[in-house]
Image (spheres, rainbow, N blue to C red):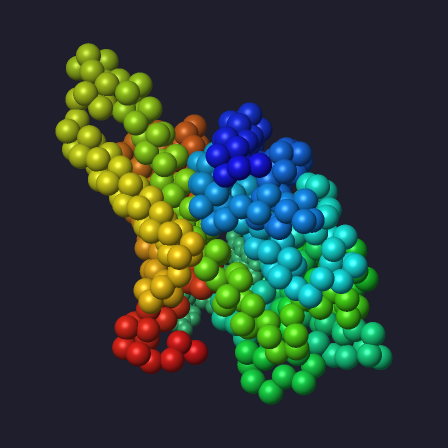
Length: 382
Ligand SMILES: Cc1cc2nc3c(=O)[nH]c(=O)nc-3n(C[C@H](O)[C@H](O)[C@H](O)COP(=O)(O)OP(=O)(O)OC[C@H]3O[C@@H](n4cnc5c(N)ncnc54)[C@H](O)[C@@H]3O)c2cc1C
């Protein structure tokens, strides 16, 4: 599968499967099983995995384009896809055991969905500092007890890439990553997810109570979880999250343009778009911001393909900017479309609600600003 094929397949699935059920899944808070069946059949669940285990070996550019296409139809689906992709890459980067190899083959075959379970009730958005600690279990593995505060896809995935302090951890960032089976005794999903936005992405809390993880499902060396979070997860999470924001902005521009072309002042004999220059100006601002975000995403992808001095700053800046841009563009869309957008007849209020998740998903916009300023001042980030 080439990058172009992957993006074409994502667009087809977005149109044929995802878009049609987005409003109803949002209303009901229902996870889109159909979307993930289709993405699995299309080979997209393993799009970034290495070819030797059946993946397509694609890079960040294809990932960002696929995610933006999915997010234009439903940001919840795009977010689950992003978390799965990051989980799959973390598993792929681990020392290959037969157990992990089986999981990777299943992912590439579209039969296995994974996710990240980093955030904890105790350390909140500071995902780099889990308060849970793995306890050695007779040398055959570890036991983990943790309250993971939000886990995208909870109850619908087959495995969780979870963090915990290493058994002998001395510092708050001495974590290890583990692959926890969804069926592991002691793992329960808390109450169903009922959020303001991303209502179809099942981001419930997950409770681990003495879950046993065998040695062959440990994903990093003890204490090396933090480095894996920063090197494998963070850059791709940030570009993927920015791509979700981009998809939301594009959807908002399309919805506003359609409304301005169809809604009419009959007494004036004109559409809203024909009658009101202030609405045209606001649509133009939305378009400018959306294309600006697109350029930022492209720039970050290019940095990830060819890392250099400014790459870390771009990683931090792009997600911070994307969260704010998505909120601004969808807020403008709400205003431009008036009461029609305020009612649930249009998709715009869903886009507006979904857009607000980006800034509070860790690393949050505030935390990113703190890191950016520290980087500019030459201070240590942590
Ligand atoms: C829809 C959704 C899906 C999610 N999915 C996942 C998932 O799949 N896996 C996962 O691990 N987590 C997930 N999360 C959790 C997410 O990544 C954050 O950890 C969570 O949203 C933080 O919420 P909190 O209430 O704990 O924030 P808090 O940490 O309590 O933050 C409160 C406020 O303080 C600010 N703040 C915090 N620290 C600082 C600082 N150092 N400097 C300045 N300001 C600061 C924050 O920006 C925020 O505005 C998800 C969250 C949501 C909303």
